[in-house]
Length: 362
Image (cartoon, rainbow, N blue to C red):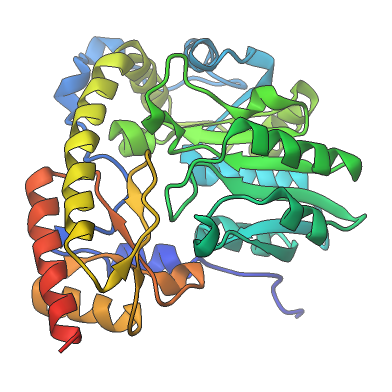
């Protein structure tokens, strides 16, 4: 039997499911879960079964919010599965794929599992984790088929502006490549209407969901924006992966879109308070450096001394607090802090993080 190709699992997701839980959890990157009763739903609004390629009311809700035609929308079980489906449709085993680093490990592992030849391009701390098109152009090859980004960047939360993305699109066009942009954190800009790089040109394929900004992870309401021919390919490919979606989740997602502005207001207020709390903590530390983005739900501080694994272990074992070790992003001197949860939990978790840093610095 031949050896399996690429990665066969996500080390980060395994860690997240088995080792990230703590009394003061700063490892999560999404808004605290919205209670079901906040959706104002009744059982007579739900059904269990449906079929076909997309639930029309949900496609209309997504398309109406982002200005995208129904023929360019593919729904999927969250952004993670949307990424899997998109990459599977965009590449063949052995294709050259340019991938940002630091990268969101499950997305990278998916590309490896699907047989991609990964060529990294750096998003450096010294450059504020910005995308530099010239670095992408330098890594480009004639057989490059895909360029992969997250925007907002995971783990740093940094925004890539449309002008930079358009430049990346022009680079991709020269060799017939696509640009896949995971936009799951973009709604934290709270713009009206929300922006999406899908409108920058036919090279762009976009994934997102209701998960991170709105506290609706359990709905698994994700989607892909792609040119119509490519979208049809993804729907047919999904026949092999998921067949049909959970229809109750689709109906609940439509209700969520109907109430999205109210839900967004809750998120915006919480993130405003929590961001200020984290900024004040960073101001108080002389042992951390950090790029401080204006938007998002995470930051990615760097230790001035030592290894973040030691900090993360001490923090969880002694101080009942968790953050994400930077090794999952190939930067072991960093750690990712999520600040989208309960404010009191964040405050207490940061106090404990400070105590752990003090202990390691002695």
